[in-house]
Length: 416
Ligand SMILES: [Zn+2]
Image 1 (cartoon, rainbow, N blue to C red):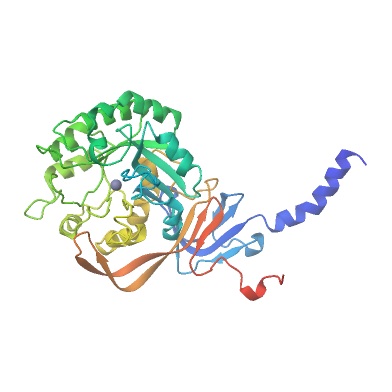
Image 2 (tube, protein in one colour; image 1 turned 180 degrees about the horizontal axis):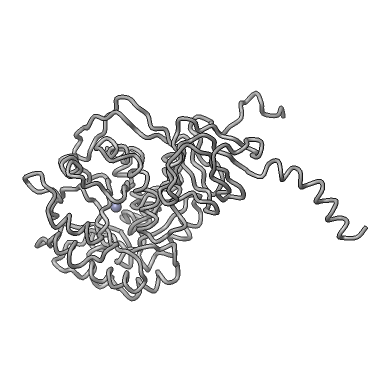
C-alpha cells in the first residue's frame, strides 16, 4: 500500500469525527463582556486546542465535546491580578521574597476567576532566577513579575532600605533576560528622604519600556505625593494602594472629602491608579468620597498575602464587588481586571477572548442579595451585589468548577 493511500484512508476515518466535534469546550448563552473586542452581549464561546476558536451566537452544541450552559452568568476573559505576592518559601525573616507571608499562586487564583497573577516586588535582580524556578515555572496560573528595584527583593527590614542594592542597570539587564514575564518594576517600603529608589526604577523602566509601580509613603521626612505623581512618574506608571491612609503618605482625599486636584491632574496625564487593597491599604473613608466624585481605580488588585487574604480583602472578586457596590459599572469593573490590566503591563495578548487568544476564561455569577464588605479598619459597607466564580478555564482546561457546570452527572460516568 502506498503512503498516499494510507493517508487517504486515515483521512476518511478521522475527518467525520473532527468535523462533528471541532471544539473541546463550548460555553453557551453567557453574557460575554470582552471590552477589547467590543463584545457585550449574550453569545457563545468555543475553545479548541487551548485557544479561543469562535465567539458567535447559536454555535451548535453537537460541535463540542463538552458543553457548559452559562445562562444567567457572565463570561469574561480570565482575570488579571496586578498586585499579588506569590514568591512563597520557607526562608526565615524573608517576608514576601521566598518567605512565609507570600502564598502559592494556584491556591488562590482559579477559585476567584484569575488566570494571571502579577507578583509585585517579591524578587529583585539577584533572586529572580529562584522565583522563576520555584514558583513561575511550576504554577498552572500564569505568574508574571514586577521586579523589585532592590536586588534582594522584598525581604523586609533593612534589606529594603539598602540604597546600595538598588541598581537600575542590573535591574534592566534582568528584565531583558525575561521579556514579557518581568513586566514592570516595583518600589516599596523605602523610608529614607531620597527619591533615588523611584528615580532608579523609572530609569530602568525607560530603558526597558516597562512601567513602575510605587507603594508610596513612610518617608522621613515625608516626600510629596504631588511630586511623585506629577514629576517623577511617567504616564503609564502606577500608584498602588490608591485608597490608603497610612502614616507618612498623604491620602488622595483631603480633609474636606475632596480628591486632591493634583491627583485628578495625574490621572489626566496618564498615571495609573491601582486599588492594591491588601491588609492595610483600603479604607471606605477614602474610597467612598473618592468614588462619589467618580475617582474609580484604573485597575483593581488584591495585594494578596497572608496578612490580607483572611481579612477585609478576601479575594479579587470580593474586592471588585466593593467597587461595584460603590457605583462602578460592571463593565468597567471587568475591564479594569482584563483589557486595562493587560494594557498597563503591555501584554496585549492577555485580557481578552478574541479568536486565537489563549483560552483563559472566567464564568462569573453576579449574585443579588444582602452582603457586607469590610475594609482594613474593620468598617462595613452594605451592598446588594457580589461576584462569585462559577468556572475558570486556563489555556482551554477547566481548572475551577464551583457547582460542576462543566461536569457530567455521576450517573452518566462509565462504570469501572
Ligand atoms: Zn503589596
